[in-house]
Each structure stands twice: as C-alpha cells, then as structure tokens.
Image (cartoon, rainbow, N blue to C red; front, side):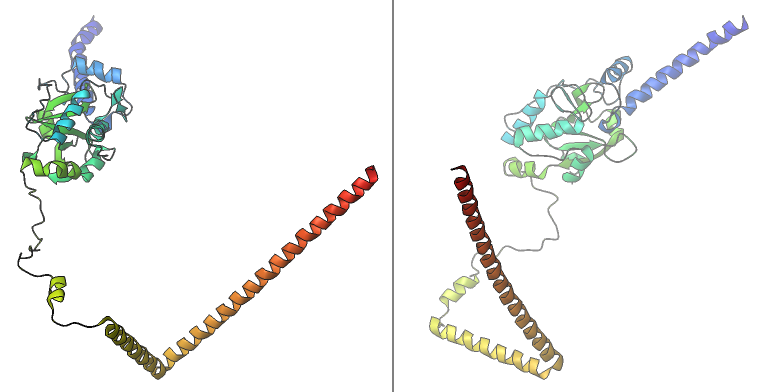
Length: 322
C-alpha cells in the first residue's frame, strides 16, 4: 500500500522531468552545427510534441514577397529562396532532398548569382563584410550562436525583419528575428561584397564602411598630367643625341664601378674569384658538350653494329634453311 502511494506521488515529478528534457533537446537542436548525429524523424516528432524555439512556431509569415522595385539580382535571390521552402533538413546536405543552414545559403547564391560562398556558417561569417543589424537588406546573411562556440547557424534576410533558414526540426522555413530565441542567439550580420557590388549602383545606398582614412583627393580637372607637360615642353632632343648621351652615362658609370672595385682589395678578389668560376663553368660546359658528342658517336656505332649482326644472322638462317 505504501509502495503504491509512493509511485502515484512520483508520477507527476517524472512527467515534469520528461517534458523538461524534451524542451532542452529541441532548443539544443535548433542550430545547424549541433545535429550531426540526430535522426530527422526523431527531431520532427519532438518538435511536434513541444513548441520548438527557432522553428518558426511563433507564426511568422512564410511568404517571401519579391517587389518589382528591387534590383534584378535581389529578385533572383528571393525567387531562388522561394524554391527551397519546405525542403527537409539534412546535416551536410545541399540538395532539395535535404539541406542544412549553410548549404541553403550557399545554394541560393550560387544558383541565383553564380556566387560561391564558403561551406560552413562560421566561414561564411568571416567571408562577409560585417554590418549593423539596422543596415540589413534583402540578400544579407544573419548569423547566430546556438552553441557554446562561435557562429553555428545562418539564414538569409528576406525583408520585414525575417530570414529564410534551414531549421533542424522543420526544414526550410521563414522565421522572424523578433522571436525571443533569435534575439537571444543573434551573433552578427554580414554582407556578401560581390552581391552588393552588383546592386550598389541600383539601390542608391552608400557604403557606410568606406575607409575613412583614405586621404586621396581627386585630381583637379585643369591639372595637366606629366605626359601633357612633356608634349608641351619646348625642349626637343633628337633620338641619336639621346642614345649618345645614354651611352656616355653608361660608360661613366662603368668606369666609376671599376675604380671602386680596383680601390677595394676585397672587391677585386671577389671579381677575380667570379671570373675564375666563370672560366671553370665554361670549361665544364665545353667538356660536357665534348662528352655528349662522344656519347652520340658511340650510340651510332652501336646501332651500326646491331644492324651488321642482324644482317649476318639473317644470312646464316637463310643459308641453313635453303
């Protein structure tokens, strides 16, 4: 009787512990980098039983609007993102049969704009130029720290404070950055420079991260360049006089160098050693050429002897059988 009462009282405690462990599992599986050994079916069943953080369960709109006023490159990114909606999650995947978070962003950019991004979310974070969250525009990447080490999840901004990403529990979905989970795990935002270069002339937005230390000034329009000044110069030197002048300068330089070498015993010795080495190298080259000629002559003799032997053998065989 006492044992049955104890078991009856322990049941609520056990049920509470089970729900708490399930909630921890779902929260821990919300980032790309933490689900390598987790079954997709198991994650889906847990996500259905418990309201998963970071899974889009808050009711964020799953529509991705593509405004005609956006640059063509931005529209292509958003249209490509639409095609991935509903794709299931697969660790290391990059196809419509299963894709992870960094695989999704990589495929969107390469399919839409032929821009190849690094494969992992951490590498993509380093690849992008860091921007403030308030600067986010369609096509920018948003990074999250879902584990204990750096960036482990990534999504692409699609406008209206939302991202498209691959959730471990629900696959490719649209989630709001205002959800408490994403506010808590937000790490940084980044911009793909090649993409921004394509649209920078069409959006009217200036690059706020331009180097402020760049003190180069544009050349005044009326400042003549060196070539123009040379062309306008009244001084004219004939080509033959210029060649003669250069030859004279070269000769004077050579004489100065010779004088310096002659005045320095160490330099004179170095020149002498260099000359000796040059002579030795030249002699060695001559010997090598001579040896090569001998080898070629011997090779020719060998071939001639082989031909004579073959002829003799053929003659003997022919006489024997005839």
